[in-house]
Length: 329
Image (cartoon, rainbow, N blue to C red; front, top):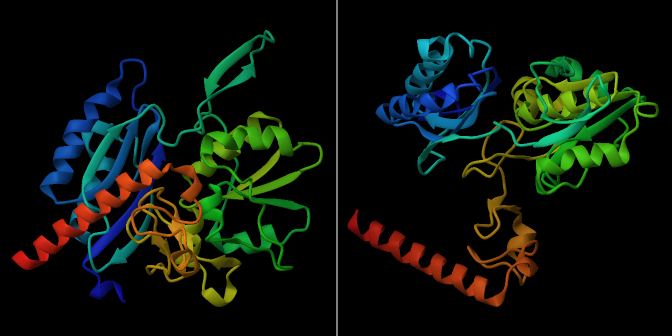
């Protein structure tokens, strides 16, 4: 599918910037941003916090261009989002059902962690990538970096994302999977498994780059010196690097109804389990514990019989509503 044949532009965007924590100024941004997007029929999710913005949204190419110009240039943001990081993809249909503009404490949730102040007293604070961050690596330079035998390559995403696809080195060794369920668990993984004296070069990556902003900042503040991250994340790498030259293996999980994308950023082979939100492949669909909208092999034991019965009724009502909608067309 060429860009010309695509009706919808999908934009994954973020930027860390001080939008006004002291007076909660960022709270005043939600309504005008929401209204701006509604007027242009843009759907998806945009998060706003005092530390910046983050989201994935979709609409016509003109609508998305308008939104990006608004975020970068409007007086509301006082020019603080002019370095907005954006990755584009295209689809024939809108991948989101609705629009959500949400106020959050963090645009990517890592939480607060203890650090020692100059007076050696403990201090809880949130990681701030505007203070310190790892070294950005362009997609064109990523292969050479991760093929360095002295580099420890870490996938900062959650376990179900890693299972769909990840990077591998030239020797076939895959990136380390921290096996986290949420990004909040990543700092504990670092503290338990990484050592600045042993891991002298660390390279990390994530879907669009935002989680690595905080992940690299955390390592830097824990004493790691040579810390690198893939600029623009996996999506920018897939957009930039030809498949024949790629170190990427598998598909990439995305947070919309496409579920995964292939190396050409086209919808992949996975579907979503609407009980737990994890991606499921064809083998999972054939498993005895898979039931559409009810469970998959991964989450089957996470729910009670009562919960699965409730999910089954919900799925039934959704299918009945869809059938009525189709009849009415």
